Amino acid sequence: MTAPSQSLPAAASGTKPLDPRIETISWILLVLVMISVPVWGSIYAVYMACLISINVIATVGLNITVGYAGLLSIGHSAFLGVGAYASALMWLHLGTPLAVNLVIGAVAAFAIGLVFGIPALRIKGVYLAIATLAAQYSLYFVFQQWTSVTGGDRGLSLPKIDVFGFGDTGFYYVVAFVALIATLAARNLFRTRIGRSFIAVREKDYAAQVLGINVVSTKLIAFGIGAAYAGIAGALLAAFLRIVNPDQFTLVSSVFFLAAVVVGGRGSILGSILGALFMTLMPEFLREIIALVSIEGADLASLLSPLREIIFGSLIVLFLIFEPRGLVGFVDRALGRSENVEARQEH
Amino acid sequence: MTSDILVVSGVDVTFGGIRALSDVSLSVPERKITAVIGPNGAGKTTLFNVISGFYKANSGSVTFAGTDLLSQPAHTRSANGISRTFQNIALFPGMTVAENIKLGAHAQLRTSLFAAGLYLGPAAKEERELEERMDKTVIELLGLQDNRDSSVSGLPYGTQKRIELARALISGPRLLMLDEPFAGLPTTEKATMAAQIRKVVDERGVTVLLIDHDMESIMGMSDQVVVLNFGEVIAAGAPADVQANPAVIEAYLGAEA
Image (cartoon, rainbow over all chains, first blue to last red; front, side, top):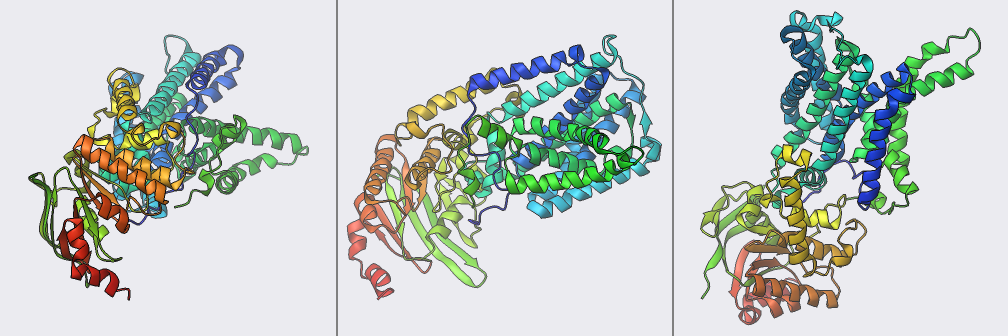
């Protein structure tokens, strides 16, 4: 029982809390940037900002499960799928408004997340990751095969949503607002007993028990919250793309979110934002670079898709080896806040 | 006379074919310091882990303030008023000193998931009150003012031991179980630690059950000493009586000679 738990090594750990003033200023700056995107940005920029906001929500959720609570999950995109289908079905069959659909998406994903979180009570680390693969594949199977409800491979098509008559810009503000609230809520969570109990369970579950933490329910809740965030992101994605089909929720997309967590910084809300930003924009940068170096007529663009996956994988490995704290590690160093002790903290 | 707050009676624990504890009985008087000593492998930590609910006893009972402990899961101990420290410090390196200590009060906090996400009103108030309580009750007592907001990892060993003690104390426990509080501390820090434990018992009415090897510290501060050897209680009583007990001398000196 005294054997230390085999959780992931503490990632974005050991730094002093950020000066509250700096933090408040950062939040205000973030809000200003988010508000102003449609003013200075093109339609394309607004589109990307929507996608980034949705990915931020999903990444924050996965970071709660993987980064803070230490429960490795590689089935995250399946929970996005649950949220997307649940909200799309509500919309198509009951005509409920977006706000209701978001809540339904979150609740549905939370419930399914709890079910697939049960293995986390018995197994850890890599073995848990394999068990979450079951979530990934069984939910994909349901999306694809339950044709009478999900529309099978063709999926579901949704009507265009018009928020207050502002079209795409209006929808962007809804997405950005939800992302902001979701991120702030996650940040708040880790100021209280609930967030602390997640970290305690990740680092030493036996000590957590002594402190009165119910390890079983804490792990389930951590898994459920991660899935609920995915559900919200999925519901927004459905409304954004106006189509829901199984191929949006594959293993590759789960790995995408896992990469966002690792690249951004495990156990860090800022890291989730940076990771989602980086991972969403990376394919765009790649396209630009390929366009720059490509010779006239050569079809380098067709390489982009396979390249993407190779780059996801290599990024995870490179960050784990060279900067386990992710992009947040760079930020901390830039602010002179790194203490560099946690890197040697092995237990 | 004070009453016994913790009563262990007839506890048996086996691991495979090994009998780690056999028919162990002891009582811990309230507002006193009881020390459990014994050679390595005598079953001291096993006894702690049974009381904490980590190990299942094959038979016997553990009663704390009239309630049976063995039928309850480990995480209910804190709410019952029992806290403990670990032999090899079990702090959470990914958190600050303050966060580690606050975790000690987890069972007493009520913030729900949604209130935590909003962090308005009750949730924020509970955190503020907890911080005040922490500053008032344990930070100063254990001299942790300078380290309050630093990361736990990298702090000196002795400081980490005091943080763990602070974490065990913030909930205001009735029974404090200390697994080797003096191990690895230099002589001066041992004296400080002993004085702090004594202070907690005298001023806050906490009952202490501790394990250690450091005879000098134990004999000096304990009200009662229980000696374990090969999973059995071979002596119990006042420190001076136990020291003079031939079976104890045999277990300690005979085994090593």
